[in-house]
Length: 93
Image (cartoon, rainbow, N blue to C red):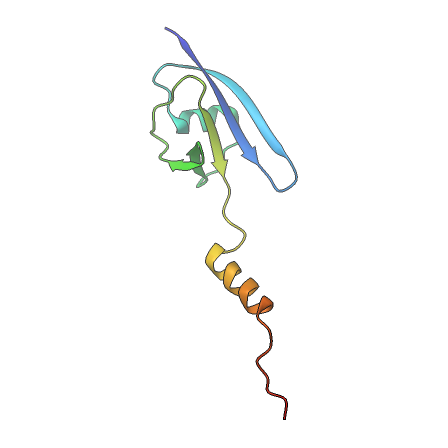
C-alpha cells in the first residue's frame, strides 16, 4: 500500500511549526493532526485555507493546517478602525 506525504502546520503569531508525515492511503485530516502531536482538542482543521472536517480523506501532498481561533472578530475590528479614522463632526461655534 502506498504512503501519502502529508504536512501538518501550526502557525503561531511568531513562528510556524511544520511536521512532515507519511500516512497510509485513506488517512484523514483528523488522523494526520493526531499523528503530528501538535493538535489540541477542539482545534479546527483546514486544507488550502478552507476549513475541513476531521474525517476528510487526504491526498498525497496535502498540507493540513491547525487553525487557531481569531484574536478578534474581523467585522468588529474593521468597525473600530473605521470609527478611529473618521474625522470629528463637531461644529465650531
